[in-house]
Length: 433
Image (spheres, rainbow, N blue to C red):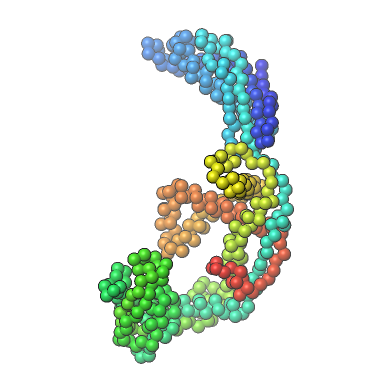
């Protein structure tokens, strides 16, 4: 006898309702088999192991065994229906057992009735083929000049500068002034406004506006009071927008002498020659600019994709009904929400089709980039995420979305335009490369 019989009863959008009748005879047979297995090993009070009579075993185990068998056979039925019909499920199937599906009062396996259950499958929609050319984006590649490469070389040479003390002369832009300073508000020193032998590069704009310029022309030993004002959006609220004074003394002046741009400089950065360093700069700049542009266009690409997506959304993913305060705005909100859901479904389907996954190596590369950014060891950053599973999962989700987007962006047909570094800078403003 067949274990179960199934038939499609209703088809409504993405919902499929099946009726599944599980043979009572088969359930009884399997329940009896399980009870005999239990009897062989059961150790009940008053009986030696494996010697309890079946009526005692039934009293103790019939109900649990009966429902365990039903659950197992129901799961077999549910899984096989989905497999036979190639269902891609949006959620777990919903199951409704008929009210008569209960164990027999006499605990006789021969009296178990056929069990009817209704199984409702919620499917993911079929995603129609999409012409990505309709997204309509521009793609650019970077054309570098010799001046662009030299500008980067000068930055590298400056990073390897030698610092020579200026026994005579005055503070100039580019110099490092070693100073003592104390900040006052209304004549009272404020917290965090004092330092001794602080190394400040003039022109770095690392201090509030006017501070560095106020030191220009000073000699070693000079003292000066700078009347300044903190920015309105300064991070310390008690000082934001406040007029202050800084009393400053110049202890020493260091002149930065950039390293010479030659093969020796290249070797300090791990390259065999200056030409090899130049080639690496060219490649790195191109990659950085293109990645920055991709990142800048992410929201725009997603916004352009949404109107192109038109397919049914699984009912469980639809926005919940809420009290309407403004009918028009409510309709717009729901429309936008449904489009965002369609976008999410499309992106997940795209990831599946293109076998996009986030590997442990992807995660470790992210950890290493964070370590470089914050000047910490990769292990220290890894330990932070490893102790917070929710935070770790959020990073995996972010990396997953980024990988999907990058693959999608690269797949969008578009004529590529070659532009200069300046033109690229203008496109990326205010984003930094």
